[in-house]
Image (cartoon, rainbow, N blue to C red; front, side):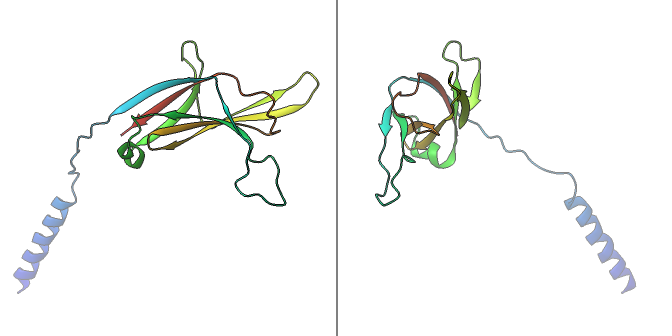
Length: 151
């Protein structure tokens, strides 16, 4: 019986050492990606709060542009990665990830913040520009965006 216990212990220990080795496998994963550029110079004003009430103000004032994008399928939307960047429109050598915030000062000393962001849904991308002073007299300037889908 003593030899059986020793044999069982040695067998179990050797199986444990073999199974805990540095053995692993690598599964090949192929990644698809699509990169698109959009230049937007026509913006739509959204100035309607979702619920009317006694606290109506301009918190819901922003500019947006919806882009129809058939490459943003349900599969890409559900299982992929979507990222958007603000880029220079000439040579596209500088990219800034969204949301992007910029700060301005007028010659008279007033300051404001501009936030550029986006939202994704299957087949659509919405680019949004918001101002902290909710000024709606001037629409945003022309922007060029780079959007990348990976799935």
